[in-house]
Length: 293
Image (cartoon, rainbow, N blue to C red):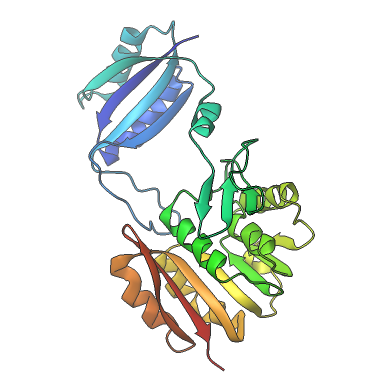
C-alpha cells in the first residue's frame, strides 16, 4: 500500500503544535527534518532543540483526504497562516531492511571489521563483529565511533580490563573483547543501550566478558582502559569521575569531540593524564592518553 507524505515548512515555535495536529488528524508517523542544513550540537539535559527552519513531515495512508486535513490544520492554527506544504506519494517498503541493504562490511585499521546481518565477512580470519543497525547508537558509520575502533585495532587490549562509558550498541565493548580484553564494563544512561549491548555481546560470543550497567550501578574499581565516546560537554563534566576509573599507567580514549572543542577537553584531563589528540576525522577529533602515577 502506498503512503502520502505531507511536508510542512515550519519554525521551532510551531513545529510541536503541527506535529500534534498531524497526529490528531490521522498521521501514522510524524518526523522533524532540518530544512536548512543547520547543525545542532549538545542540547542541555531535557531539551529538544529544533532547527530554525524545521520541516514537519506527516505520513498518511494513501486514501486519506488530504485537503480535509489541510483545512482542519488551517482552522486550528488560525490566525497563524498554514505553512507552505508539499505532498508526495511514498512507496510502501520495509524501510529498516532497505537501510540495512546499504550497510556494508566496514574495516577499521588492519584487522577489525563490522559485518551486518548475514553478510559474508570479506576476511574470514579477521576480527569480525556482527552488528546490525538498531535502537541504540553505534554501528561504526560515524567518525567518532570509527576513530575509537581504529585506536582499538592499533592498541589491542589483550588481557586488560576495559570500561566502555556510553556504550550504546556495545560496539566498542565488543571490539575490545574480541581484541582480547579479559573483562569489559559497559556504562550507559539509557536502559535500551544496556539491552542492545547484552544482545550484541551474545551474538558475538563475548557475553561472558561483557556486563552493562547504569552509571550508578557500575562497579567502581579502576580499569586498564576507559573508552568514552559521548560529547564534549559531558566529557568535561565527568572528567574527575572518569579519571578515577583509570588505574595509574592505564589509558583513556575520548571521542565525540568537535575540533574546536578539543582544547577545552584536553584542559579538563591534563592534570590526570598525559593526553593528546590521537586522530581527526572530518570535524571530529579523538583524544588519547595515559594516566599519571
